[in-house]
Amino acid sequence: MRKIILPAMIAATAFAGFMGAQIAQSSSEASAQATTPAKTLGDETGSPTPVVVELFTSQGCSSCPPADMLASRLAKDVSLLVISRPVTYWDRLGWKDTLAREENTQLQRTYAGKGKTGSGVYTPQVIINGGGGAVGSREGDIRSLVRLAKNDAGPVIEANRDKSGDVTVTVTGQSRYMAGVSLLALSSSETVQVGRGENGGRKLHYTNVVKSERNLGSWDGTSMRVRLSDDDLNVAGADKYAIIVQRPGAGTIIGAKLLDI
Image 1 (cartoon, one colour):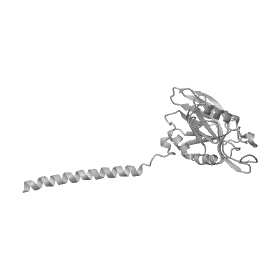
Image 2 (cartoon, one colour; image 1 turned 90 degrees about the vertical axis):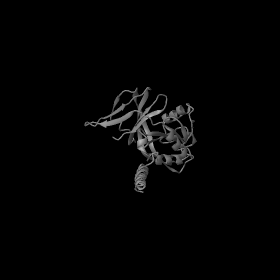
Image 3 (cartoon, rainbow, N blue to C red; image 1 turned 180 degrees about the vertical axis):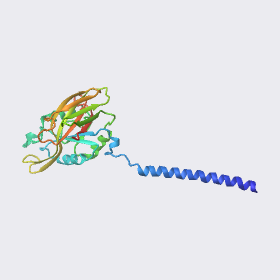
Image 4 (cartoon, rainbow, N blue to C red; image 1 turned 120 degrees about the vertical axis):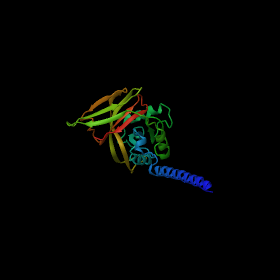
């Protein structure tokens, strides 16, 4: 009888130990799942470089104000760099856009010529990372394009101010392609009272409006250093500055950074 009881006790002890290990493992996995947040659109760890969202808009377009408001909300997402680019071709409707730049119009036409998703010359339009586009007021479509945007290892962009106050931008990394490096001067907030046209009588609000942009040179995958002048960082109406690294001919945007200077 004693011979039967002893093996049974040993088996029971082993089974209890096994179950205890299983419960501990399950608890550990559950704890890990509970304490590891899901990756979201604004998760900086998932976005080594911000996704650039360019909004082509116009004060003369009655469909644009909802897109302008959406741009303001999207700009609060640190994984995005939202840029407003007012265009000129609606000026003929009785109101000349006070923020429009012909360079914005030409850029949109260049994007349209590539025939990518959502391409065309219309407002409001959003272009993601120099690639696919969508109607600028359709948040779901825009967020889908943002999720699909490639955020692979692009160049590292840094800006440093020395003791004399000079700012130097450094672009490093590896690339098989040549890319242009541009400095954008932005106005973080603009409010316009529209006098005539489709939005006559309305007060419209804009976010990160392009005031000027300057080509800093070409990056070929080696280290690039550019010193910014006082004039570069004192553009009338601008209170933000961003670096954009983009393949030639309004190609894919492979790097971007809002300068903290």
